Image (tube, rainbow, N blue to C red; front, top):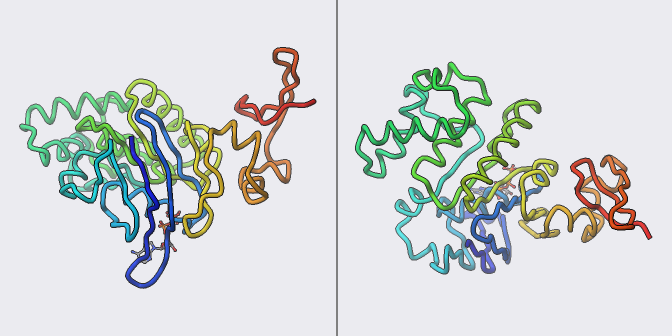
Amino acid sequence: MIEFRSVGKQFDDGTRAVSDFNLVVPSHATVVLVGSSGSGKTTLLRSINRMVEPTEGQILIDDVDVATQNPVELRRSIGYVMQHAGLLPHRKVIDNVATVLRLCGVPKKQALDRSAEVLGTVGLDSSLYTKYPSQLSGGQRQRVGVARGLANDPNILLMDEPFGAVDPIVRAELQTEMLRLQRELEKTTVFVTHDIEEAFALGDQVVILKQGGEVAQIGTPQEILADPADDFVRSFVGLERGQRALRIEEKDGQRIVVDEYGRPAGVLQ
Ligand SMILES: Nc1ncnc2c1ncn2[C@@H]1O[C@H](COP(=O)(O)OP(=O)(O)OP(=O)(O)O)[C@@H](O)[C@H]1O
């Protein structure tokens, strides 16, 4: 479990990114932070593994304050996947994954075996393991990025817009893969995106952020769609201007409004 307690961050230049942010990420759940550019998503995500140090509040992982932990050890114990995969261009795919394990002290042969295993888990064809990152498509590179995040079998996975740089079709494929991985591996995952559809597709809980890291609403996709907290949320999730394809289904004698994912958005009297 990850717990944010009144977390705030003001950068050295005076920019306030986040104020009084509170959130509980239950073990094995996927929580998605969604908001427009500059709403503090990355700041919050990086506070978990101390790539950013909050200026107020605490973050606890299984009741232990991360501020009391060695930052390097903490970072190595948490999987991290970033937007452009962050692969080392001069190392082969398999070595990119194995490097993470070597840094954690895993012997070479074992690191290579585990790397092949985890590349298989993310659905990368074994013919690609000895290629260089530049020889892969954007979607394939992102799979390698996810494999790297999963390499040392962390309990926690942090994902910062991991599918932001690929085209919509590949993005949808990667989202489907992500759902499969979550079912199989049950990592506690914090996922950052600016795409509300991605947030609804992947999140058990979705946190909608306004500028300054202010929480507009936290809830399951169903809760947010059925009962948006305010006009900002209504507009952000596309309920306002009819962008969302809604239809009506009969269930247990009730007429329920559902969205394109079949998620309930309300009940008709
Ligand atoms: N190192 C820094 N120094 C000063 N200000 C920063 C720094 N990093 C981020 N900020 C500012 O903090 C605010 C939140 O930034 P953050 O990157 O967390 O937002 P975000 O929601 O992840 O945005 P994006 O979707 O564009 O990545 C922004 O105003 C940003 O300019």
